[in-house]
Amino acid sequence: MEQFPAVAIAHFLALLIPGVDFFLIVRTALTNGWRNATGACLGIAIANGVFITAAFAGIALISNPVLLDTIQVAGGVFLVFIGIAFLRSNPQIDADRGTGVKSRTWLRNFGLGVASGLLNPKNALFYVSLAAALSTAAPLSLVLYGTWMFAVVLVWDIFVAIVLGSRHALGYMQRIIPWISRFAGVFLVLFGSSMIVGLAVRFFG
Image (cartoon, rainbow, N blue to C red; front, top):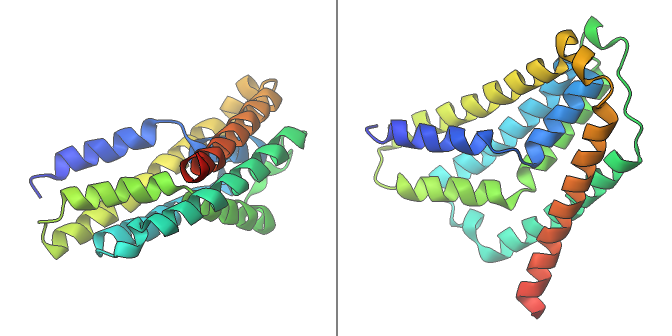
């Protein structure tokens, strides 16, 4: 456990870097409210938990090039699809969002969160790298590491959702929500396309 501070800091710094999951949380929080955005937060955390468990359990399949390439293609297609959906949508604030959780909206966000997390090969590679650095750790330590990482991902994502989806934030974000949605859409389309093109270049270049 003497490695814990270094691993915890590295993991948290990785969370601070805006990525696909971040933009998904931002948009769902701003358009559906933070309570409904917790669906996406939990989905993302569970997806991270799958990779953490697989990596720390020493499952070689998770770092198999064929599997990672498949995830990259599927992830690229998924991101392009979601990005186009963001660009075509006209995001509006849900007037009733402060009254509680809407089960259909929450479940939809949960599904998007799971897909976003599982179809991002960078998540798999990141946790495989951490697992390699902790290869000499005791099994109980690995359980504690994995539990900590899952909890930090979930708490941080919910924190982001609360900050951006609160009524206080709404007054500042009302006018820029369409621009945020467009920016997120462009980012996702470009990011997803780069994943597909990068893989194609590697195979056929």
